[in-house]
Image (cartoon, rainbow, N blue to C red; front, side):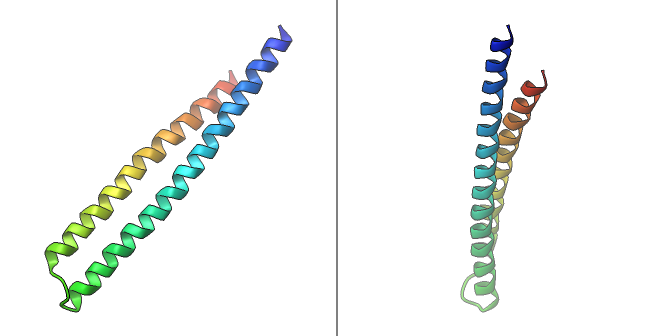
Length: 92
């Protein structure tokens, strides 16, 4: 019985570690993609101020950046939930 419990705990720890690494990977990707999207938006806005592009391009770039950030927010929430579920399994 004790051996089975140790195996179950070991598996739960492994799944929790995997979920943690996945969450960190997702978070890092979210930051990288978010930074790129914001930089692209800032560049487009600067070009608009300089008269090199129009406001419609700025709006389009803003919506693109917003979409990327929202998409990654959903991914991060999913990764956090998997990590939380893994941690809950350790407590039971």
